[in-house]
Length: 256
Image (cartoon, rainbow, N blue to C red):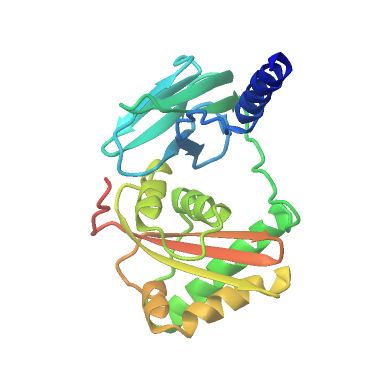
């Protein structure tokens, strides 16, 4: 009888141990806040870069670990990082639920080369494609009786920012915010095209032809009341992303 009781209690203890080992742990992990910089994690002194924070639609508090190096400013509905001095600072984004996201920004003193997309073309090649794309667009404008447009560095920065994000369809909010963050204060027209299987030397012509053969995109290219143009080209893993912005000073950016 005693042996039977011992075996009984030993069985209970063993079962309890097994149950303890097999019950899944339910560790509470707060969903992280996504935070990125439009112009990447490295900025120049004096440069401004909009912050992309997600999920969208929430109210966030944004702080810098070193405002003398990187300050943060709220511009209407979005936040901007301002590079003040050389060094690094951690940007912290939090919401009312206590969730937190962080981003480290490094500030250099001179002009820094933008990162090259992995397994893609070099920035030098992309720069050549961008110049050719501007030339083709201005050629089309002239052929259709509207003035050619000067290159706008702010719109070039905004277009390259968006192409580097590798969007395959329009993201209106992000486009509006990128244009403001890069320094253009008015409304704009925008074209986007994405394609594969095209050599770098043919990319500008292919992007231009895509827009030329689409009535809506063609109309954006030849809009008369514009004051500047910017294009962005990013090639990654055999896919080419092309953006075009034309500045329209008589229109309003809804996020300004």
